Length: 264
Length: 91
Image (cartoon, rainbow over all chains, first blue to last red; front, side, top):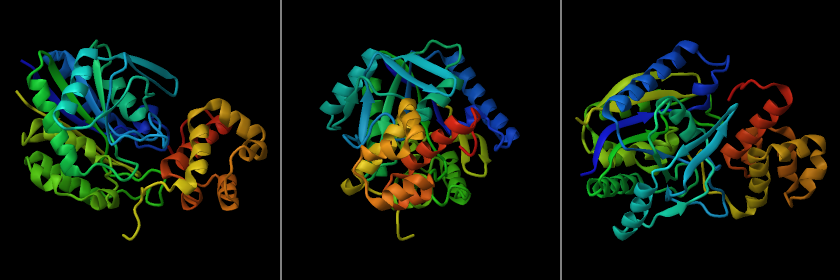
């Protein structure tokens, strides 16, 4: 029977991989160490699929059609970042099953078989899938282009995905990529809301899922946490399991949060 | 806060966002823009204040003129990277 064997919430800022001089390198090293710890968890648990939930930054999709919720069902998850080019294999059977069965369960997903992937997927996968051959299943939850799905809907969607995985044969690791507070392209870019982040992390550690799900779309935007929808979707998959904060690094533009849930 | 940081993109700003999307996604488009900004922009029916914001390459001004914040931000950053250095600065 399908089982979720590991769950992670991570930051994905381009600076984590590009490591420019603008960054505090000790902070980046702490984030890298957390990614390596997650990679070691994958090595130990040997999941058969790696499901990653992210928010498109207007790269995979544009205003010709912008999905609220989507699953990628192409053969390879491809994209480039700086000098790196990636082509991760997709777990086609699982991604296709999630599409069909989520629709059957009342979640009207969009799908893509040719989306280009951006740093929100590629940066975390660069670190945690290094040297591993685990096929991926990318899920898109709209974070940046209002009107986005409500936090409650994201949570329910995650719960529906978990129910489908329970009926599947594969063991699955899940990752939410996003957050925490940052405001790219806006006047608040240099002023993240670290207090909001610390509240979220306290709730994550205490299994305070209901309070997180009750946060409004306006509050998420105000706190620079539109991407938290990825994490909320993941919480829907794993319920009230308490998370462990591997590191939280407040940088000049971003609250880098790295969380692991022990589901064993 | 009265206004969202990320708000619904108005269809009246679609063409401006499409221009920025081209700059964000295509290196060849950025090269054409850098060689001939006026010629590149002429292919898009954008408003004068949007053209002025584009010339400034200031993400906040582009946002005020209707750009999605991520598109103005990334177009400006990638143009800067293409012209100044291979290093990521203020990403």
